Length: 219
Image (tube, rainbow, N blue to C red; front, side, top):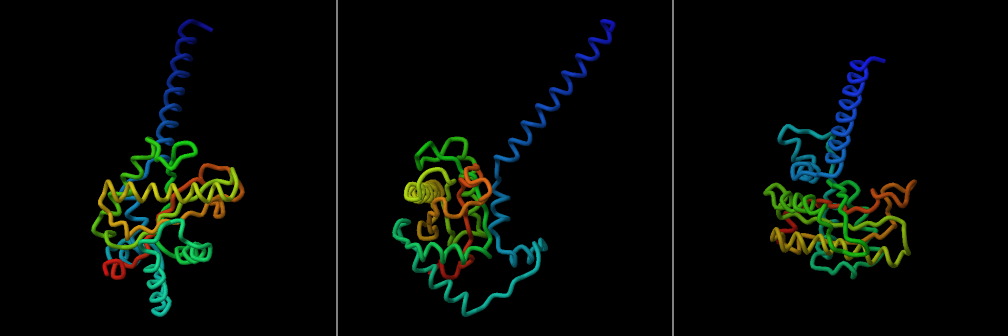
């Protein structure tokens, strides 16, 4: 092979290597970052999106009696310490939120700690701005902590509750969101997002759910 051919081959190889690295960096950034707009859209009720011409799918019919009972239950949760919730109440919350606007945020914490890691602060800041938006402000939100399957049930339950509380404290302190509008609950390792891979990072998350009850929350 001539010197010129070898140089051309080297240039081509380096170019491909540079492109590959750039693509890898781009994908990593997109996977880790979540924006205020993404959170806002995820937590905005479908009927409100449809009103703005951004229909997200078929509308669901609301049972007035069921909605009233749900509202009364949510009222009993406001101002409650996370650890005061019974297993029955936690399960009732899990049932109610299935059909509510929600988003799973991969929030990292310091090891064996409820302290939010520096690399996850941008996502928490984006959450704070979204919940402060006039379209969402005043509703009641469930902040649910989840862990992976590593460790015992009691340990993970406690850790998930402490981490949900940590998110609430940050939102109240940094964004002046009313503490009564944030209901925290911990599920430990009982509700894995990826049960086929119980130790996967995707299971270590904070789920935020819009309970869609501004009228109740404002009373």
